[in-house]
Length: 451
View (tube, rainbow, N blue to C red):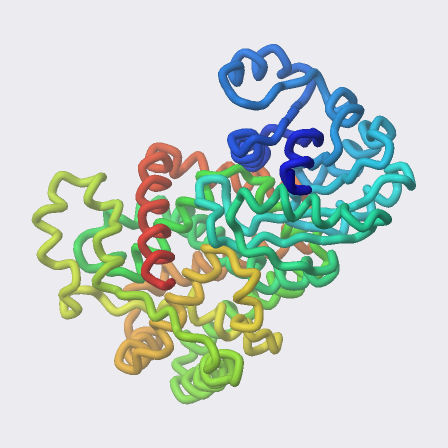
């Protein structure tokens, strides 16, 4: 019997927190032959025990019961509450066990473990860089070996994680937080700001006729923004507010959006062009970017992922316009221009972090490539930004939204973050289930096509 087989027979895996990611882990581990015990809050015990009675894992009363018997305990909880939950259950940790977390921000997580876990406990954290509805196969999985006193601890965790079929990347928690800030913070800020702007305008962009928010790039913007707002607010708040590296990125995104919009208003064509060309050169013509094959998403493929085909029975009449570039109104694409400008201003090369990139980041990088590297589209975008006022009101609301999110993050206000997120979420709620389905199909199509 191999060591991996012995571990599977003798070790118990504990998961504290049965949210979407905790549940995904519990199912995959247990279905691959590991003994798994889980819990959530005490008040949900009876409900969850009944709900998951036919699953391969066992639901226990709370984290004390999970911690006492588990050889590896994963805290899959909101980053905001990680310290108080580890403080509550940490002392019950089984002697010589290993503890880790699944939060997206590791600095507060590691500090909580150091403060509240017994010294005989090893600390090896993980982070799957994707959402619960994405197949983990081939996706990045970060393992952080922060404190291990036994030589087989890391091998045990890698053996367990191998059933996810993910690409394992080993980092320190400081490296993890810097990379996730560089790849996720501005990406999330962009799509959050898009949704906020549309909600303030009181428009569903997929209903605005055959020549406004149509075409592949627009479908990506709409679908991913809706996908983000179909999730829980804390998934994004923790990374934005508690990650010490994220604030600078989010503030810069707001600044870039504001400054580019000001150049558009002032009709400073040459200054805007020069600034964007410098950003283009830095991001897309650097040694790092050249060494990677470009994603260059196919607009003709992305055109089919439109919410308008569900919202409007007249979609079949609109379909003849899809892909007809003469019928699609030029767009300033301010959200995409601002992300590339932000990377340039901060000296961040996105290609340096591809090994730890999320699906959303790779897609956002792909559409940015498409915009900046298709010269005709790039030139038309700058021309529209200066001379076409069709999107001027939309761009104004977008800039205001980006500044609003930046302020919320700067003041580290979780309550205001939640309130703003759920306000926009409520506006789009009728379309979120179908939007999430289409978004999943689109992401699957893009990722499979870019392999």
